Length: 80
Image 1: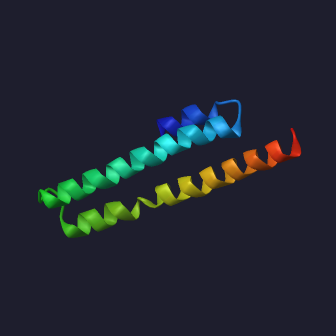
Image 2 (image 1 turned 45 degrees about the horizontal axis):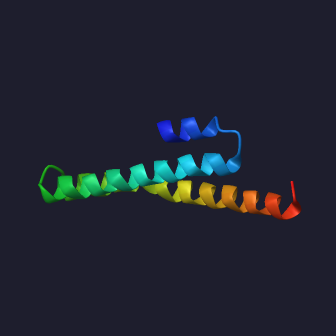
Image 3 (image 1 turned 60 degrees about the horizontal axis):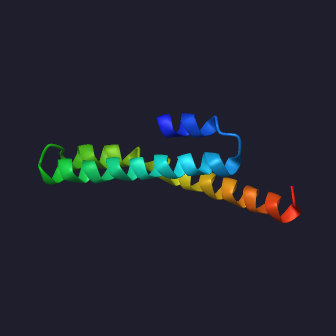
């Protein structure tokens, strides 16, 4: 969440997208830690599944990144 907030304050979509890449990487790290917690039997299968369901944020970040990168590409092609 902090990466997204920090990125939102940037002056360009391209710069914002860089912070979103970091946020997505952090979400992947959380997913890996959930797997470790499950492997070490600190999380039940149901708990892991429920928490993984919250992982949809990674897909949302990917969509926003794609939008920002495409928008930046279109701006550069138009010479703005």
